[in-house]
Figure 1: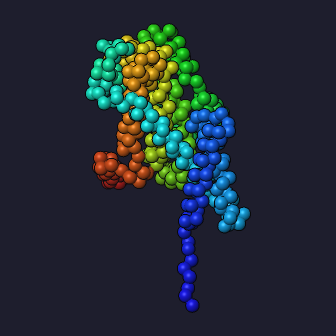
Figure 2: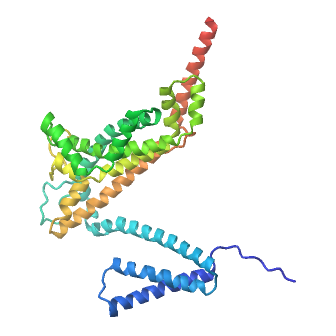
Figure 3: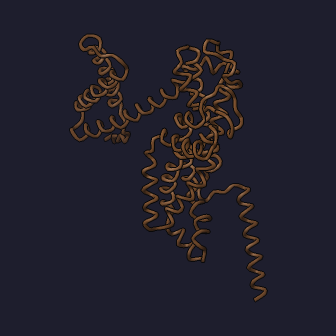
Length: 374
């Protein structure tokens, strides 16, 4: 008697045929509904109607060969996979749309090397660019990171290493600030730095306003990451006679380095796309300003908003091109952050390994000197 091999694959040809048949039938029925029966229109409405029809037809086709338990399992799998596909399609659409709409502007070299000082609303794409906005974004986000990263890490370590009513108060304030409207942060910096202290509207003021938005995100994410550090590592450090500060600096923070990098990325993503704080604290200018401490300075999100709202097609194309440049800039910053701080807890760079070796040799000589004296 010939032994039959058992099929262990979770995906069968009948399942693929059921999915394709349900998709084709749902698209056909929805198209008939849009064209002949109901006055619907738009891609979103088409997907919203076709999706439940697809699920119903897929469940019907699967029920012809399987029992009720298998139907529920495959239907749940179809829901999960289809939602993941829709999310991926939405992400690709969001990324591709500005690139497609601003492709003509991105094809000109002057778009990356010039500002908008000599370009008017009716000028062609051969004139003007977004260099002034790119420089403003880099300087403002750099100022914001210089302020946010040390303050955020210090506050996160404080929340993780201490207990008491003040710690609970700080954590409550941080969680409340995560929902702070961006325009409120801009008005706060405008009132405190510009009106009270006397600073002029500049890129530095915009960086301070952006840091107000980034700080609670940074603290909250870093606090969660530091809580994941195993307590056994801290206890081992304390058992060796190391103080709380050195334990936090040499054990807790290096162990959570990769997660802390993620918290910095999350804060950067929150701050680099802000528009209203920059408009309130730095104003708007078509000129290139390298000095973030004097004069108005624009950013890529603000330039995108100003250009896209124009009625001229060339200005709209410049706006979509500025949005594409912003996405590329964010991608470069994220890759650099991952390269610099994305190593695991046990991984060290060659420079850091040599530094640790020199420190170990210095400690060994000091211990030997103490033992020789005794």
